[in-house]
Length: 479
Image 1 (cartoon, rainbow, N blue to C red):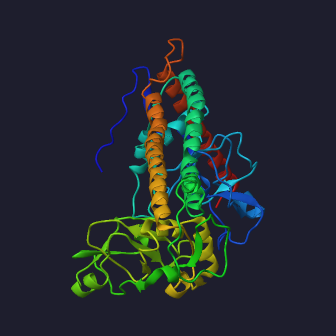
Image 2 (cartoon, rainbow, N blue to C red; image 1 turned 30 degrees about the vertical axis):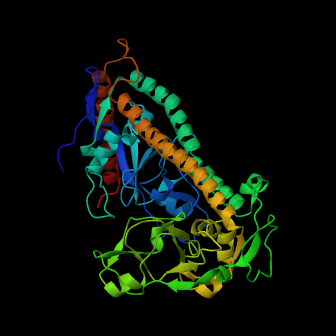
Image 3 (cartoon, one colour; image 1 turned 45 degrees about the vertical axis):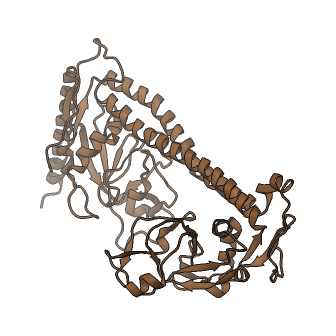
């Protein structure tokens, strides 16, 4: 790994290794056999309890026995401690133990470091720096091992803190405490938009497949339904005039299962699998291929084909998407191609019906469950009830749904851009803070050099006291 690029700091600041402002660095432990089944005692904080906002998530809190915790020499949590995940997928994640921490007595397990800091430094200032891009980059420069690797206690030698005068640290923290919650609030509000858009799309589909979307259109365009076949024996809800409840098999020329042959990483034709069916459309990422000409001919997809995911997890079985591409592709065995009768139903409208909330609930009701997957075969699929309007009205439904979905897509694109900007904003503010650009310096502040001198004196004194305690203990307990 190349040399890390340090942030340029103001002349009246000093840069100090993290090891110099830490009075102790320690991690905890758990009883032999782990903590499974222990439902009370002393909370044991692990990596999963540190959240991305620098706080904690105690949803699935673990415990160690009280007697075990009392005997722990290391790993006990105190107010103003900084906790850092030391290994695994979230290595480097940082949280601070402040006055809102809900436990009077808690400890960390072996996957978390506790940083006890000098009393001569603003702990929250240090916490903010370690959460900044620069701080995280320095922490992770000590990462070693594979995917489940981590950092050891030596990481404190690799991290340097830009240290301003103590009063300036306080002003920086006050400013960050005022700004960052607003950023967090904006992010939280934006995070609600995908759910709102999802609900909007479902509302559009529900209105489209019940006749409500085209109520005004029917007032001037009453048309007779051309379907003359068998009607369904049940009616899930009352339909508009001219609409009929029909089983899918009665407006289809059958159902075709996809290829069961093994696909390859490269080849002549993509093989669409269950993961390629997303939100009613085809997702062209993560493709597999085939070179078998006979299969390419047999399972070749045509523009307007509707695919149904017959086998998947219990939550995902029954996904449907429409193929609207002028490109070569076939489909895999976990998918069914619906051979709909185009004189009665449009492929887009069929796709809408299969993606409604009613369809999802129906799939949960009729699926058969295996060990890890659920299944809905073609015979069962054929019994799905379609609310069938006249073909001309279907054209109007498709036009209106496409218009409303285009609006939702536009809003979603704007949301993604806004969310990306807000995501970057927090780090931009932190970077500005640690370049000395967030608050004005005060010439009356104690110089940073004097502060560092006091920190080092405090650390030397503490080291001396610990050394004397060890000597006295050894004299009273001679070997």
